[in-house]
Length: 244
Ligand code: IPE
Ligand code: IPE
Ligand code: MG
Image (tube, rainbow, N blue to C red; front, side):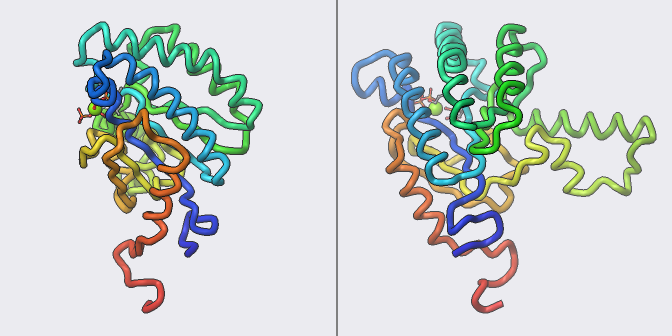
């Protein structure tokens, strides 16, 4: 089964909504922060497994535009975890030929965090193995709004004719411009919603929802999700490949 964007059935782009850290911890009588800490371990396992499976792009939802509504103490903890992850893991990811990219709104972010993202991106820019895309301060509606503003500015400057605005032009103005669209989206934690993630990009993505909480996730879960994906018949509005 090797449709467009597949290498022997392996999805080219996998997007994950890493959900359920808090519930995982609460279930164990631990503070939510313990779930976030274990969530980083699951992230490490998943990046390793994705690279081994030959997945081209892995996009991870690490902090949404709406997550700022959480208690200050939890936000502070999450930012610190992210900072520590970048500080301790980037060198190893670089050695593994992983390219790091960050999507989301950087305007108004702590300058230290912005600088950290820029350094990680610059260091790994030429790497050719897995593309690890971290969605931070990311909201799909906000991303689309920024793209519309960018395009409107170009129209006002006479650089784009409104008649030339196509879905491809819009796609290229999103933070994910240049990346293939996700073939497979996985959400852990049992909820079956997108929570403002990759709304434009997921027009024809296959969804796999898993009840397991994110801190439990690992290579085996990823393999299971990819297996489920391979059983799907992607028609893109057409007919089954065999009957076409
Ligand atoms: C996902 O786990 C991590 C982030 C959203 C940053 P949650 O923190 O949402 O955990 P639950 O969904 O409350 O269990
Ligand atoms: C989505 O999870 C965001 C991340 C995983 C970073 P949430 O826990 O924020 O989503 P809702 O609130 O359940 O929709
Ligand atoms: Mg959640």
